[in-house]
Length: 249
Image (cartoon, rainbow, N blue to C red):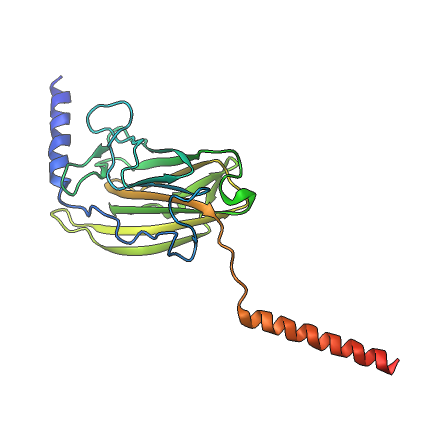
């Protein structure tokens, strides 16, 4: 009983200490409407957007310092049926108010799963064609193990096609440390319907600040006008050559 009271008191103190340390908003996260990888608006039919800036709002089970969150507080739109974030560490807790709402672990290596489910039949996203999947993560303290960030594609843990560092800097506050915001991109052949991401820290003391997921039709890369002109010119030259051959014959 005394140990339980002591442990809960320690968590409460840690929550207060960390409440003002870490940044509250992911300022560098990209929007598909203005990005090179997107081309759609959040909320459009056939797209998915879920985004957590503060964790622990509602895990559906109640309790103090719950870290499983079914309520993406910063964004939930498009053809999405569910957004769910799970922390697999029993010692993890949600930091306090103010600039809090992060998930932090003192002594164990943070291990997370975030998933979303599409509301609609297979092919809702991308109309049966290729799909772009964007995962954006903001964290502080200890960094992510980048090799651990995977998307489950047909039961296969699949690394991102590209990883972009959007920003990094000092976390500030009494504990110091660094902050990172990254974009992970996948292009897959068709809509999965259920998108599960797994990722973990390099070691203890990671603070998870924000997670955002965008899913939509893969961008069609336009053919430059110069390429069309070159192609037309080549076709014209071929036609001229054939006419000359016909005259000689």
